[in-house]
Image 1 (tube, rainbow over the protein chains, first blue to last red):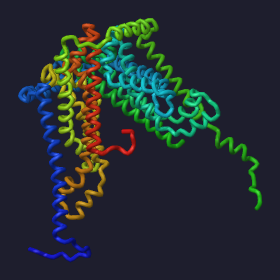
Image 2: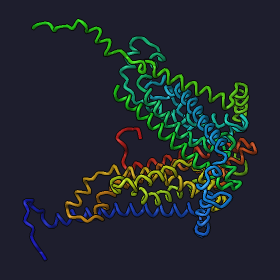
Image 3: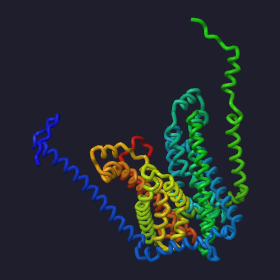
Image 4: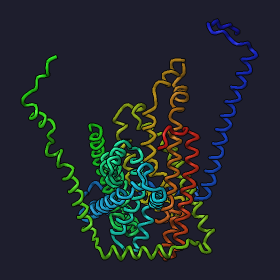
Length: 298
Length: 282
């Protein structure tokens, strides 16, 4: 059925319309080809990765039953009853575990505070706008990057040899990693400040340190505290596995329970860790919202 | 023009308005002192001592000295293949997590599932998966599929599943309703609404997040080998245990280079997908 649509818009001659439509189609085809090319490249990469990481679907489906049965087993006591039928038996080591959980929190707390303190002293050197000189800025920024990229647990492995087994190695590992991670965030905060107060203070003849103290620090303190709280939350999660390499905290106990097949202990410790992470998550979230609120009312 | 009448008590009132309460004036100091006291308690409780610290730092200094220069010895081929394994684990784990997280994120998104009854448990479930560290998941999966990189893939997939579920659902929640309504007003069906209204908004965000996670998972994948789940972490832990410091520093260098390379590639791809951000800060 051929209708002529009468509109107020004058239509172009058919030849021009055809040319425009053709070029539109070409553009769409080009875009789709590029998209398809990307998808094909990605799938090829995935197949390569699957070969590289020895993925075998037959093992997976053959062993998938193990996954559910593993959870079934960690939720059963030795007597064969479900764990929640006998809390006293399930959490038999509660006292010991709570002490270890507290140690985990302390490790991450001391590591976070120590790292934050080091970063507080160093980050002004790495900020583009207030840094005193170029080579120092680059050196400090590279140092942060090194501390950030090497995973915390690798530092823990090395520190366990340097400091001996125990929480000290974990604290230093977390401290170093925190220094790297916060260093980047802190210096980015400093790079975004209002420079007028700094110029004002410097114009009175104040030294660099005085300028930082009275013009930069008051502007950045709230953001620093907020990022530090966020980091603390991440560090608690990280401290929970420091025990895997002997660097203190609840991880050692979990590793032993998993390796020796103390099934109900595994679930009990995992639940304690999850509860801890939730508690830290909620309380730091609350504190951060208060901090942000304070900043806005100022 | 007459002068403004001045309240004789103005000075007092001013002082009252500007007088800081006790909490306002000293609150910061009290919180700071408490935080510092807890820090000192932590140092004491965790058995920090100056002599141990100094000894340890001296030891660490020696280790750094032994690390120079980085040297793989004759092990270079096996290190390179371990690195390839690590990258494969990161890529595959992230992709698996994204594929499985997408349907769950729909369940956790407020604008798709308005009932809090279903949404809330989904969110808590995702949160508790996220609360468990990747290394712990690796331990669990090793029990299921045995030692090797496959356990690592599954560990990364599981822990990212929680993170992706949260991030995707947030991306879906912040999607603009207007394009969807526009499609509907021209007579499109509900499938058209999703395909032309919702997907073009959500997909670039999700793709950017996946790329970002591939990058950060390269970092995670370097360590899951420590518990036996494949990749370069196994080699690293072994070389540290046998005190082959030159090999250790070479492996760390390899990790740094690989992470920087993935960082570069994923940043380029991310810019290509979502466009360069207006400000330099990403």
